[in-house]
Image 1: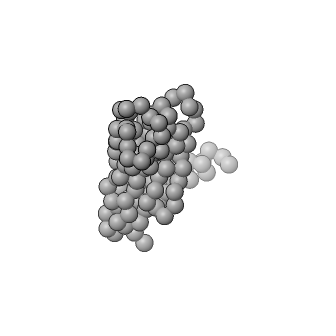
Image 2: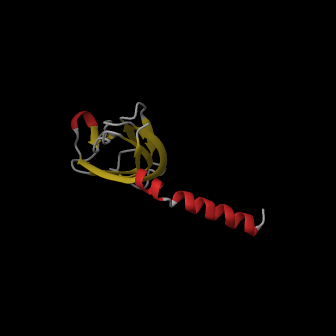
Image 3: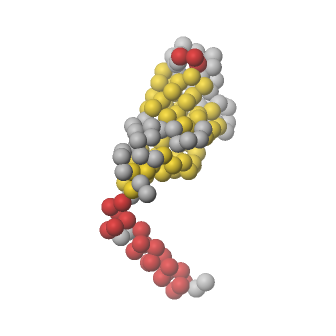
Length: 135
């Protein structure tokens, strides 16, 4: 494909993505929640704000700072349990792209199985995506 064609395609996409109608229908979304261990039944459950009525949440990313004995964050509330593993046990961080959909009124949650974590460790989870009109 030549440069002119690539430039025209880029201009077309920029016009589409930057159009006024699209800017009004897509709203950025970010929420952070935290719990300190110990948690009841060795499970820290972090709720996020419910999806507004008339909107649909498209979740695109999750990041977390986890305790030393935590291996997985489970995202719930979308109708499926989505496991997001910590890729390296030597650090306490998770950063993964995801694609999950939450309908109007759904409450996204992060479940962290804290196991035998020491007395007080912070479990911090951030979810990022965008809100679109519910169809």
